[in-house]
Image (cartoon, rainbow, N blue to C red; front, top):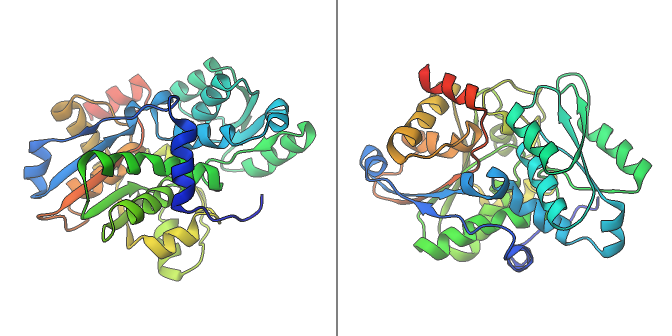
Length: 321
């Protein structure tokens, strides 16, 4: 894949391409949350997106950007779950064959949904095998296009459409807080915020045990770590992408981290107070705000809830703990 860094113009193109396919998800609010942090909070509910996460936006845009010949040859991707579901669902809607390389320990709900959308699944061991190498080999054998979960300009542009909608709905923001795994959502969100809400400070949030993005911004170059272990399964990436890192370095003020315990507490807050289910990874940004990892007092703060795909037994365990 050539290294093309997307711009906000690509986000606008993506908005047109996915219109009528992706949901325009609601922006939610909570007086209890506002009072807890002394700010006005806006939650972009991508847990209510098609396939249960923001990933559908980027997947739909990337597949939609393929020409007719490429669509006939199909697509290959790799993901722990949300991107897998998104690619599978978008591919079905656009009549494209999809093959997904998934870790053998991916959440059952995500495996089931990916299969249900019609994708072929190839399993791998996330701690001992290289998913990108496996996907590359399969794509080469089949002549298929590879659509990675975050290191792709059309994926990044598609993810940015969520924040573009949020700013349209609620107006200018003082601060934007976004989950960070591979960096596609954060990069796309930063592009949208920069264009539509100038002056908005942008922050990423990672699991405390997997702070490769934080280290990368501090060092000024991509830092690669061992695959971390956290309940935030959608953020267990060893490094951010080459296509998104230049955007993160230029437009993201800082990256903070939260613990698994803080993620569980935030999941409970959403169930008890806002009556919504948000998966652990989807709670990253909200957890940072609700647990005072950022100074939000008096500010208008946008928070992206990136997904809601969590196994029911796991959810019950989190809530009961």
